[in-house]
Length: 383
Image (cartoon, rainbow, N blue to C red):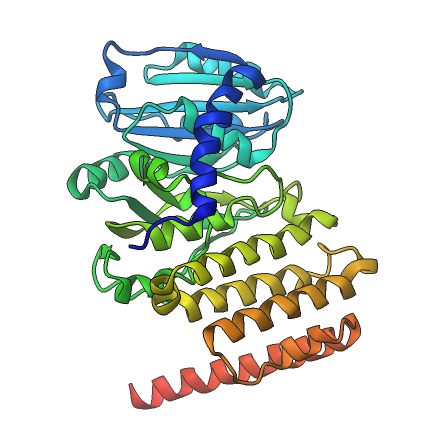
């Protein structure tokens, strides 16, 4: 794959000069539960859990990472300055745990991205993965992941997940809309195959990463709360060498009203800045642009419009500003990639009028439904 750009270099320097010292400066230190002799040399996988005021969920999250001895993994809980009982619960679990278990206590809430960076600086494993403090893994997740890592030794391993709603509904992700599964696993190392996975959800917690790959690429999360994970995941997806996917649902993503995605806040404008970083990545790498450009444009477009289509994230008084900025960014993307087809939603967004945009958006939803029905009827008729 192509080499890192200047931003990558800056992130690599920041990891060495800022993030590692930040562990000592911003946290009260590392507290150890049970650490087997020689665990650092033998550690295969570091599981980094970020927790903030999650006393309702943190025990389930941590418990899902515990499994039989000998799997070669450690648990690192980064507490982001919690004020409830979640840190107390984690300390109790660490004392009772028979796995390598460490706690990093931040004095304040540094945001999920910086907390993950600090967790990375503590990690001893050859690989790492992330878990939010309100989510959890399926019972077979860790043994299966460890087995695949030992067998394939990838830069990145991606797995499937499901959304879990407050009423108990579980809705699996459907990656085979974009990936031809074909078998129980897929080798995505070839860009011709990998481009089918580009439209899958770009989050950090549905993947495992080789630590040397993270360091070589200077991968870091930005210091922000909203959309801090999108560029990390996109860069990992396009820059990895050996890349594998397993379709098993291993991760449970909890949907609840406390999520930042359910807030009305100017912080949602961060998505525009992050999408500009994706544009820069494609500008700086002709191979990424050639292999993944149109797929990434589709993902960026869907994400940007999705933020305002919820009707609750962007403050009403700023919807016009958001739409104009989105239209300008998407037009620049299209010029770069040579995409010239009509896009009614883009034209509506360029007006900066949320009423016009909403009307066109409703019309587009109906058109897509008609297309979907026609596609299903065609498949039924012609097999």
